[in-house]
Amino acid sequence: MFASGSLSLLLILGGIAAGVVLFAGLRMTTLADRIADRTGFGEALIGGVLLGAATSFSGTIVSLSSALDGRASLAFANGIGGIAAQTAFLALADLLHRRANLEHAAAELANVFQCGLLMLMLAVPFAAFTTPDFTVIGVHPASFALVGIYAVGVVATSRLRDAPMWRPVRTEETRDDVPDEEDGPDRPARALVGQFLALMLVMGVAGWVISQVGGQLTERLGVSATLVGALMTAVVTSLPELVTTLAAVRRGALQLAVGGIIGGNTFDILFLTVSDFGYRAGSLYHAIGSPDLFWLATALLMTGVLLLGLLFREKQGPGGIGRESVLLLAMYIGAIAMQAVVG
Image 1 (cartoon, rainbow, N blue to C red):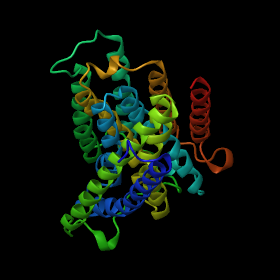
Image 2: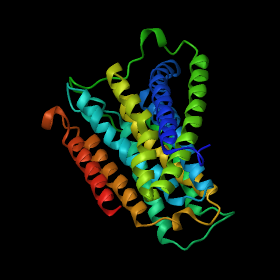
Image 3: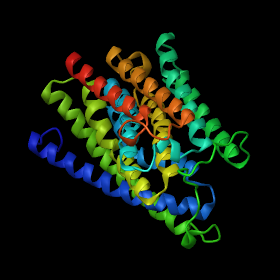
């Protein structure tokens, strides 16, 4: 259907899939906030792990489908481009929270730790690119390392929340993670988790449709797979993060908003592991080019700026947002402009 369909039909199918992703992402934000309250795990951990993984599910399907089709650059750029887009979304959320800089109000040590974890994981693909083209069962060792680092990071984040060795200074603008009365820890979360998983499956189907549309657009329009991956499929599959982040800010769940973005970004790195398993022509990290590495460098730089913003916790900056938010938007817009010029 995708190969024989007209360009108009492809765009319509892509638009419907994007709408499904948006609707599911919006509903999942409410569910994640309530699950955080009922389980007692907290917004930062639930946002960073459960919501981050769930909202990234459609993007995972895009990268895997692209890799299985032999489109290494599309698979790689979709995951890494999504990280850059989602980090920029956090700056947009900062614009919505007018009382103070979002990174100031949502002070949470777990988010700072996850940001550092993300930088570590972003460095792994760079290291893999510089090593010989070596694989184990057709998969580069870096892909296994990413899974191990992520697993250790999740456990460490949980322990950090239970017994923190550092605490953020509380100010009048700091928003604490306090459970809602109707969703206390004494109430079961099974039904909410069931709804959450069902929405994940719906988003997975939508992600597969988006991957097929993206592949066809790459071939028919003659544009680079990196451009389509980083600026089309990555942005579309990142829309749940934008919706969930803005919705979380509106609900006052600020730690969930920040944690969802950072956690989603951390989970997006695992797109590369999934893609490397799906790409059967060798190591995924040696099938990419400099445009793909450009987006990897952009994501790493933007994450570094975000980490510094979380540590510095500027209360007010230009236009009522943090200077790091201004810089993140400028970096992302500049990256898009540069990629568009290079092609």
